[in-house]
Amino acid sequence: MTIGRHSAVELDSSLDDYQLASALVREAGQLALLMRMAGLQSQQKTSVSDVVTAADHAAEAYVLEQLRRCRPEDGILGEEGASVRGTSGRTWVIDPVDGTYNFLHGSTYWCSAIALKDSSDVLLGAIFQPEEDKLWLGGSTRQATLNGESLGIFRDNNGSRNGTPVAELGAATYIHPTWLMDPLCAMPWHAAATSAAALRMLGSGSCDLGRVADGQLGCWFQHSCPEWDWLPGKAIVRAAGGATDTVRINGLEWFMAGGTTAVRELRAALESGSVA
Image (cartoon, rainbow, N blue to C red; front, side):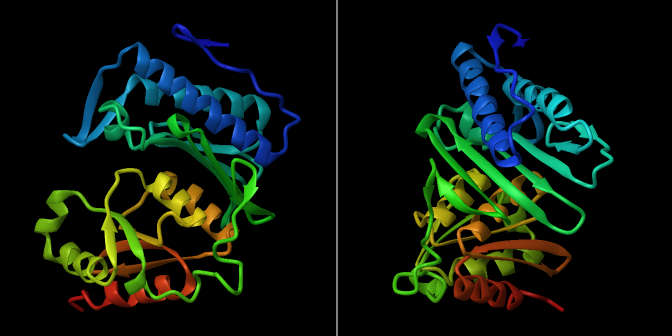
């Protein structure tokens, strides 16, 4: 098939779900990268830092077309508007370019991500960072991997991070500057941020979560994540043996991932910022 001047692979419908997810994010990410190299314009969505490009739309269109052909009974939900109601009870959740601001400004810290969920939970996630050639994959029936190598940072009883306190870990997060002006959001965020040994704000939640799963980052927290920013990484962190959690504070939903102890302590820190 061809999208604009860029050709993309038509995938084999006999691939299993993990193989299909891997192929989809790899092809979508490579398509977006090729389009950026050819030159892109952007449109502002909700703010200067919340942008969308033609690459976002083209990558999502590619994934949508492949899923409708390979998994015609499944539902589809995409960040850029894809919406298909399926009959199987399963839904693919697409983020064609996560970290679009980074992507547009020449950073390598962006990715394509996808998750498969059913009515009760996320089943699998795949995240591909094209410019670093990193593909994280994992789910409820398969241990997490990075480029095919098993991830065990949370599984080794001797070296596991599940018992490491957040005070000894670097935490990744994101918060838009306007939210820091709202005390109902700023107070929980500040409490969690100051509980960590170090703080990183890199601009792609899925890239962050992949690195929590492989041990490059210690833990992660963020508020108000849509499913496409949360489910791919959630599936992979859990498949790596890590923990995830959500909590509602001051009317906002907060999301956390990392080792068991770190997630528990992040939740307590966030809750300490409650005004109720």
